[in-house]
Length: 411
Image 1 (cartoon, helix red, strand yellow):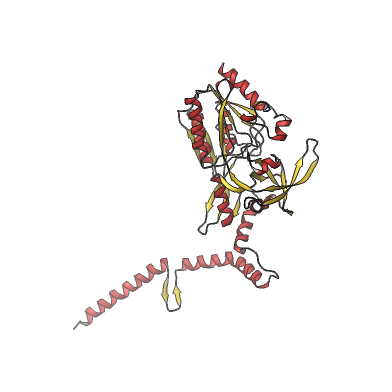
Image 2 (cartoon, one colour):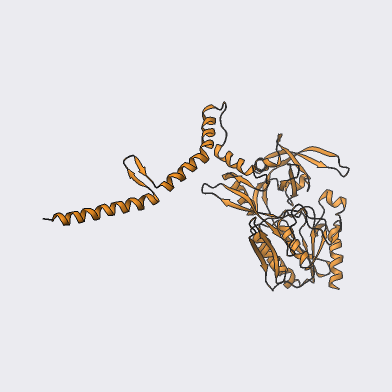
C-alpha cells in the first residue's frame, strides 16, 4: 500500500507535468479540450490582428458571391492578388495565375506557340512591341519595333492588361488571330490598321553566327534564354579556334533581354577581370556579378538599337564602360530594373521588381538607355523590310560600318 505522503508526492509530480505540458502546448499549437482550444495570449492577439486585417476582404468576397447579378468568372482571390500588384503602379510587377506562370516558363525555355513577338508597356500605358522574333509569323506579317497593339480580336487591351492580351495572341498552330496595330509615321501621324496572323510553333534559335569578309566573325543573339549561353560558347569556339577570326561583331539589335544568369555567363567570355553589373535593392543591398581573367582577346564591335533592352543593355553597358569594344547603332531601349519570379505552391506565382542594376561605371540606364559610340541609323529600306544581319550584309549599313571599324582596329 502507498503511504499518504508518497501518494501526495506522486500526485504533485503529475500535476506539475500536466501544467508544464499545458504551457508548452499552448506556446505552439494550443491545448484542445472537447470543442475548445486553449491558446496563449500572444497567439490570440495574432488571430485578432489577422481577422481585423482580412475581414473586409472576406466580407466583400462573400457579398459578391451571394449578391452579384451575373456569374463570377475566374477566381476572386486571383483578382484580389492582381489588384494588389496593380496598386504598385509598376508595369513589370504582376500576379501570374497558373496558366500565365506556365507560359512564362515556356517562353524562357525557347519554344512556344503563338505569333512571335516580345512586348512591354509603353509610357502611355499601351502594349508596345520591343521586337518581333526572326522568321516568325509576326515578322513575316510586318510587325515592327515600336508598334503598339491596341486590340486583339477586336477587344481593346491597355498596357496593364498585357498578360491577358498575350494569352489571346497565343494559341494552337494553324489558327488565326487579328491584332489592331497603331504605328507612328515619320511625320508623327498615327496609322491604325488590322493584321490577321496565323499562329505557329515558335522555336527560338537565340544564337546565329558565321564568318564575314576578312576573317571577321559575326554572332547575333536574339534573346537571352536558358540555352543561349551554351549556344554562344559553341559559336565562339568555332569562330575563334576553328576559323581563327581576327575580330568579332556581336549583334544585339532588337534583343529584348531575358535571363540575367545567361547574359552574365556570356559577358564572362568577352570581358577580362571586371565587374559586369551589380544590382541594388531599396535597402541598398548590392549583389555583384563579376567576370574572371580568361576571355577571348580579339577586337570587338557591338551593334545595338532601340529594340535592345534589359539583359542586352547589361552586356552592352559592360562592354562600353570597360572599353572592351565599340558600340555602333542607335540608343538602346532603357530598362534598368530587375524582376524576380516567385512560384507559389498551387503553380501560380508573381513577378516583382526587386532591384535596379548598374553598369561597371555605376550608371543606371532605366528610362535613359545607352548611347552608342558611333550613332548611325539603319537605312529606311532595311528597317521597313527587316533586311539586317549577316545574310543581308549588302543592305545593312549599320553592319557595314561595324566591319569598317573592326578592320581599322585589326590593322
